Length: 115
Image (cartoon, helix red, strand yellow):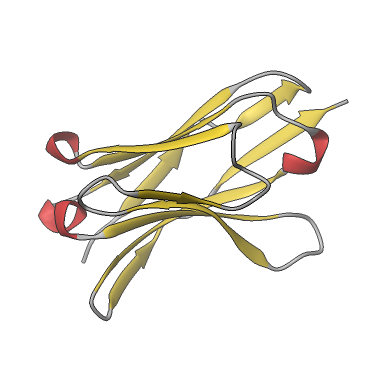
């Protein structure tokens, strides 16, 4: 069983920055696709960005140019650097690892952006 722990959320003013971290137990992290999701109040969970084991990235349109996903396989840790935050970025952010048919989710971290 892999445990994922997100951290780095909080309250920030519009235009500010946060860096989320996702720490995984064990070596599963290094063989898995890492994806960040968010769930805004009253809405379904949506993909924010993902990064492959080789470092190839993909972003949702809302995240392009403002967010950067990265990973450090040696530390079993993934990151989501979020810049120029907007009130509409307010959400619970989750990380997920996926390899073949096995996936693990973190518990989420709250990001609140005030106007």
